[in-house]
Amino acid sequence: MVIHSFPTTQLQQVGVLHLARSDRAPYLAREAVSGWLGAAHPAREIALLAASELVTNAVRYAAAHTSGETGGGVTDGEGRQGSITLKLFQGGDYLRLGVTDPGWSCSQPSAIPLQAPSLNAERGRGLAIVQALSRNRWGSFRLPVTGGRVVWCHLDLDPTPAQIEELFLAPA
Image 1 (cartoon, rainbow, N blue to C red):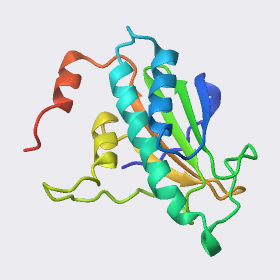
Image 2: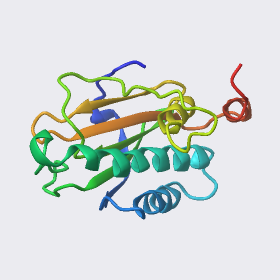
Image 3: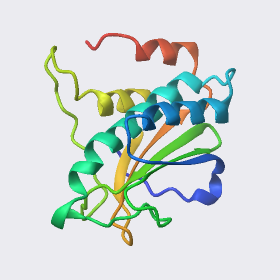
């Protein structure tokens, strides 16, 4: 994983959605991305899956780190305590998807460790999916003022059929 600093002035905002951390959040994120991109967009399915995985992680794991001494009272940067913000931007040849959550603190931008789940595991594949969808163009960082966490990925704006097919190949 590579950590980059991305000036948002080179990106066009496609949409922003504020979500409560709930079981409905991944569904609402997929609905929003689908509406923002439209049914015919070539990256729609990839963006829907990436948004779903990132928001699911925010719902499941941010809550575990926001109580007590590890970050209670953290806001999303716009004053909403404990919420999730999904943002979609378009660059020249990619989409940038970012999810902000209350997170947990880390001193520097960092990779979130990928788990190696067993064949029977029901969890642990989400970030591996995001890594594959983004062709390893993803990362995370802490928001210095609010203490929240942003997990982002870049997706091909117009993936070729070969790139899409590659996503469904079994690992070697």
